[in-house]
Amino acid sequence: MSEFNLDDCPRIRRGFRLQWEPVQNCDVLLYPEGMIQLNESAAHILKLVDGQRSIAQIIAQLQEQFPDVQGLDEDVLTFMGVAYAQFWLESC
Amino acid sequence: MHNSGLSPAKTVQSPPLWLLAELTYRCPLQCPYCSNPVDFARSGEELTTAQWIEVFRQARELGAAQLGFSGGEPLVRQDLAELVKAARDLGFYTNLITSGIGLTEKRITELSDAGLDHIQISFQAADEEVNNMLAGSKKAFAQKLAMAKAVKAAGYPMVLNFVTHRHNIDRMDRIIELCIELDADFVELATCQFYGWAELNRAALLPTREQLDRAEKVTQKWREKLAAENHPCKLIFVTPDYYEERPKACMNGWGSLFLDITPDGTALPCHSARQLPIKFPNVKEHSVQHIWQESFGFNKFRGFDWMPEPCRSCDEKEKDFGGCRCQAFMLTGDASNTDPVCSKSEHHGKILAAREQAEHAPLGVEQMVYRNEKMSNIIIKG
Ligand code: SF4
Ligand code: SF4
Image (cartoon, helix red, strand yellow):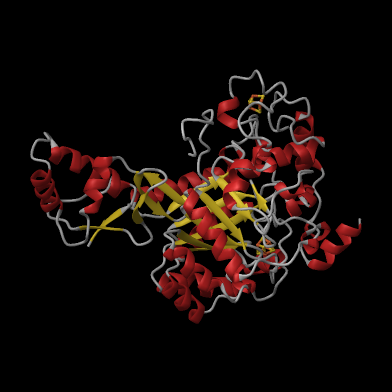
């Protein structure tokens, strides 16, 4: 599995695109000849991935957005684990 | 969808998420495993730029998200960049599926400016000589290499596609090595499927089980090596269903997510369906919505009601939808039969016989029929 640190700034890998699909009623990640439907929390996280924010900043921002949600940091780290392992994301 | 609450509720049709635009059957190469119909020379006039864009618009409205530009060789169309731009503006993820012939650095820049998302280049083999022989062209290989490099240099993600068969599959190690050298992001190692020209040449193309096993092992070794290096390249190995006991879930079910528009506007539920004795609708006469939701052709094998035995009462039907309709038609003469790949099919012997032939009496390369217009016309005249 890929390594990443809290102060890494992830960006979406070239050729991958996050997009809202009205007909599917969800956000999807599009890539060469494929598409993954994202659940809401994955979409929230991915929308903050811009190559500028660090993972720590993404967590902080989400905590501000959703102050009532418990264990947000773990959700983000789990998602990052998957996203790095699948090479959807890379560090700048 | 149009449920006003007054009409009886219909099951909502899933959207055609994948749109394939076969822009043209023209192609400078002559691959003997080409999946284009063998009578392509009879195909009608190609859709115009405006007609294509209208198809994209309508399909996008229905929910299509992935758009593949293929052919033939899509680069033959001079309006390709214009089509890409229109599709991208509509929100499609745009894939160019090319042999690399006709690609230049200038065109790569043009396509990139138009917003093209990804380029897939197909190779015939990893060796210059075999590649060129299979492609029916002396310069094909060098051109492909140069263009694969240019595609990467332009920052594109790149899929390399190798159609494998008995004459190149033993070189799997070199094929993968070449792909890594070229810095591919995804590599498709697809044993050729027997449709179109490939079906004509099956006796010369089908590898033996032993060849296949070896190739799969080589691929697995490479996967482990890449994983150990945390290398992003992904290897996709597609086995020919001739060596399976259960058919593939062809197109994930008839009319379930795949919509193919052929050069003259005929709409198909899969790219080889044209050979079936079914009249398929044309976008020149019907809206994409009508075609997808209402047309006879797209509903013919939807769901499970059309199935005869043994599929009808089989508990695996939701997994494989009874397999491929085209294969059933080619091998049994009836498109609604169980795909003979399935060991429950009474025609499974045909598949066993093909394996037998691959083992003991294959045809040589020189006996293959190459895909070109002259051959296509001869085949039409029969
Ligand atoms: S398979 Fe070969 S001949 Fe057929 S369209 Fe592709 S490049 Fe052309
Ligand atoms: S009998 Fe039909 S449904 Fe059952 S496994 Fe075979 S092809 Fe699939």
